Image 1 (cartoon, rainbow, N blue to C red):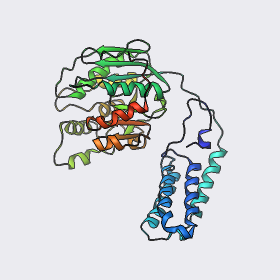
Image 2: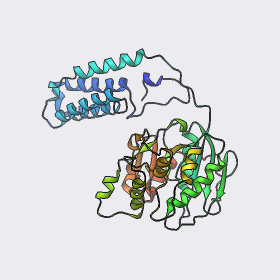
Image 3: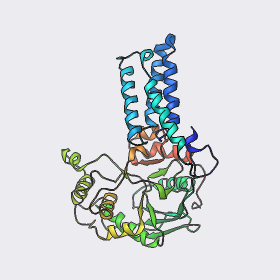
Length: 365
């Protein structure tokens, strides 16, 4: 899907519009289609589902557009609920106020000065800590590297920190190097990741920013690493405390949020995350990751970088898809910009990702 808000240009740093990306043009298109379908009175019943879907799509294109756009998205949602719950016949729905408001948004958008998008000048290194795990986990790293090479438009050097010898298929050089950092804590993966990440951050100098990613992530759509927002989840300290039983990692997350009480939710969203390189290194040095129960890596770094306030951030679900079961591995649509998955999903998901990224990266022998 393309539209005027993305310029319909061949420039490599301009991407097609995502289903959840702010675009009043797309929203107007979907609402106008719903209105047209609602006026086909002879086909009211078959069209009902199509009208519902069009209104969902319209609301999606407004939720990231700021306060006014979000308020309009809520109006569209309320109208959809009335139609879907059969409280209002679609043919009797008044779409005009919504279309008038969308027209105002579009005119406001078109009146803004046009600024030609420019790719960032500085490359961002990608830092990947690998843990020792039994079984063949090389496919995850292959997918991460293939997707980063294809879609991370300002990708700089790639540094892979291994617990032992690097995978035999991994080709060093051409912008990739490996280091070895032993996993000294068998029961605290975040402490091991912190040591690896600190070593990689020091090697990545003099880059101003660095992107940290686990191997079970993928870049599904073109992105600029330097422009990625900080992503948060919906998990808050209060919600975690309400659970009757907690995993070891959840106990660690609770301890992290207790240590940084000004953070309203956690940032361990299982996505690539970009930090200021020096600030992240300083935050890791200042944090005790080893003493039980430890700290979760990303939330602790965020708390260290922002010692007295919550930073600006975006809900992770607006940027990523998550697959954490075999069914999700088979069915996740792979339409978001980022993907995070776990072992349960990998068996069904990895073959799909190899079809998505069939070409080897420059770092495969």
